[in-house]
Length: 211
Image 1 (cartoon, rainbow, N blue to C red):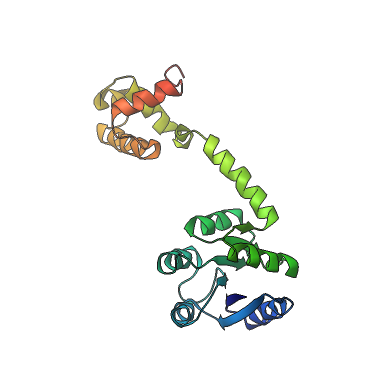
Image 2 (cartoon, rainbow, N blue to C red):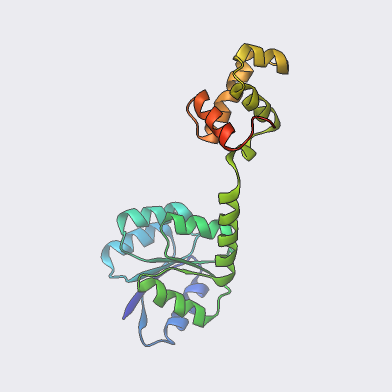
């Protein structure tokens, strides 16, 4: 038997979910809570096999709450049940430790399937969200770090890897050495580099020296 704790601040949603669970022979409600603080207290005293969690409730909520739950109850599967069909929010919830993410327009069969899947140790994403997350993740991986640089930062970057000192770069771009230093700091942060040598290697690897 899968004991599901329902966390949602809307009574009508909790009641609807209880009706969905009643359609099954292997899933029962372990209780209901309406805010983050009540959830944390209830988990200390209630045997729960899966948490069905709304992302926006009073008290601790959202991704921060999922991280908190993952730290305190690492074995508890968390299935997000949200009104937001946002792929970035879903991806962040999964990264924070949630086992699954479905939206409140999901039909009963999908809710039941998601609960069973996550309780068994798997992951479950609403089909449309899963496809979008995979596409966005692929796009992020193919995006080069230097594409995050502003136009001015890109200019400074090329002059830095060309071996010019800050003062000369400042003269060429008609900005102060202090401003050049600020750009250098931001470039290092965006490219995750620690030295000019690292920048040069990056520029060579990505064939930027002749650009």
